[in-house]
Length: 558
Image (cartoon, rainbow, N blue to C red; front, side, top):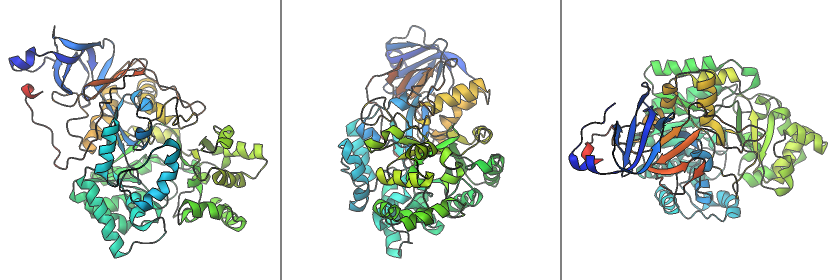
């Protein structure tokens, strides 16, 4: 494909970077083509045969795929980037952009939210010194980031800021304050409003409350993104709730980490997909993201009934110390429920729940072990062991839940409207954020999708797979001039070996870098090269553009 004509001054100017001889997959889903790509001023200046053009840096991409930078549709790095800004786990997978803010978000912040959040940050010497999204973005950019990062405003964050952690409906005055906080965040660049409805305090919000908040986001061109109220027995009702919120608030819907949860529900993904497809066929704008693993990950305390956390973490710990309350919890965790997600039961009980991270150093010996194994070592009943573990770790234990089915996972990944989201923060291989027993998705999601599912299992053509992790999420989030390899677009570029790309992270040893990603450029600068980070910090805070459209530009402007 020849480069388009350009004026003489632009044509003669050297490029910052030239990528030569690559197999270019532009993100549209169209077939790959051979060519060169020139970068200047943080943008793609030319694509085609660039001949003997000069450049400050030349990358020989012979035998490699040149693709748009990968976009993580569900990240958790809003705080971790301020503690350890290297983003090794993300860059090594080819990720250049992360969308964050699942239910909770970096803003708004006030004394109520700080009282809950700050103690967990004190060990990292991080102080939340912002109150709104504008302040957070300013802090992020001052700190420096190798990733582009955008965020939703979390409905749970807004609720906690106004109401605290109580299980009750907001008063009219409180709802007005909550809506004002959503409006403020949207004005400052949030991509929409998000929910995480299996976790307190988000679980306490009724549908009507969420519709009111979503209507505010809709006025600014935002979307409604949801960790739906159930991925288990009540999943159909939970999806219908999300669709209802989208319809009544008049905004698109994104379903976070789509899955079918529960070992007894294996094989139900076609039913779930049909429900979403029917909504799309009727004209409703709904999509979903997924991660390519059958295990989920969240707090060990999230296996408890939501009422246990009514009033916040201190109340939860207080209740767990009461033998009578423990007995009630045991009875509820032994059955399915229409109004809350029983992750423990969905995982098949103690053998299907693995300890992934702890804060209490006395508990580190148990990381990587299932609750069943911990209970056996402690010579305790499994649920008693779980309760004691939550107490001893002050509710901060991370856990893996083996809740999904491989066939269901693959069926969902094949849908043209599913993108990928890691549901993980950026992580290093050393330092205070190092987690030796995290979920492997943190280090392996993108290469696992491209290597295992696309190349080895031949799930779909590589061009379609690249679209799912580049232009599809960019379109979904209205990321102006990102997600495609196109002249004048920002030069977020991932270069990888299609033969070698694969994940190495496993459930037993998750903190392992993937193979095959050779170069990662963010806004035209090389952030990752041959297994090493450069530390350039070229990432940007991304703010929603409510008037998003494909850009009209001229080559001389690039």
